[in-house]
Length: 349
Image (cartoon, rainbow, N blue to C red; front, side):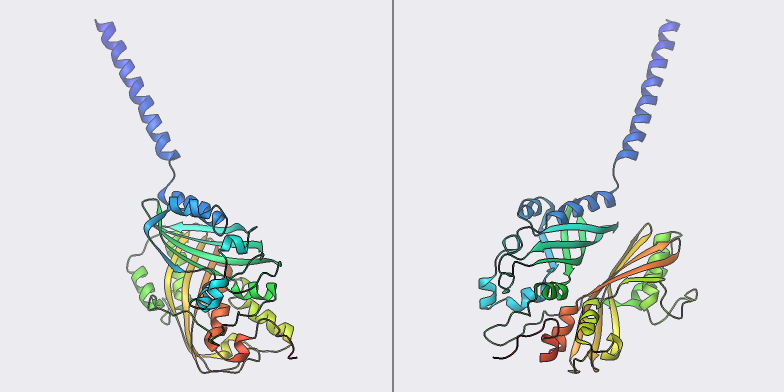
């Protein structure tokens, strides 16, 4: 009897040990929610704009999904309600060979942010631009919010300015002569407010320190440990208006972004950090009070989306990469010179 009890005790102990080890293995092997969200976004973005996107979208978008911003927002709005929209073909037909390559992917909490390269050939009508049969390669960025394994909000921005330049196509002209600029919404807040909220709940983590630096960079009131007098990053990989700058060089005109605006105030929408990467999504609010690479000032209000991605080495901000809504910025300036800036116009006959 004693031997049987010892045997049973041994078998139970062994089973418990196996169960404990298996449980530990399963916990370690199971992906975190952030990793699961990133996998969903990875699949979604790689399918976006292709013939397989509808099937993926039905699977991973929530029923109440909100598209906060289209990747070709300016082209889309300019075409809406006109003959341009009627002529436009679905993305997958206008660019049948599109491919998306994700170049950055980071997540925190219920959010995921990414950058991507978009390649394709425009073989159909794209928001009123007739087929050019030209290939293009542009960059884009996206921000998502997820819940229960579904995408509930999507926000995109692609290099519409570079797309027009590579296609050699000006902004499509409407028959009514109007240029429709997308509306801007009160969906951002002051950097100082966001920074104060973050610092009210400090965490000893790289991610906390990275977000603090990103917010402090554009806040008016800097924290005591902010010691930078210039740019807090070491290298600029991409500037927010690179296409405007490059076009200025093509036209042999000088200028700068800074001199074209006054009363500039940047407001923040989202900031996240994961590991050695960070992202902040913000809006430039200003008055176009000065020339921009030969474009005369219009004194219009400009509300220009920008998104920035940061690489860190420890607590050091090494690389900065920005993407701005350059086409939207030009359209909000609103004069003929700005609207016709990106692509040379054919000579009058």
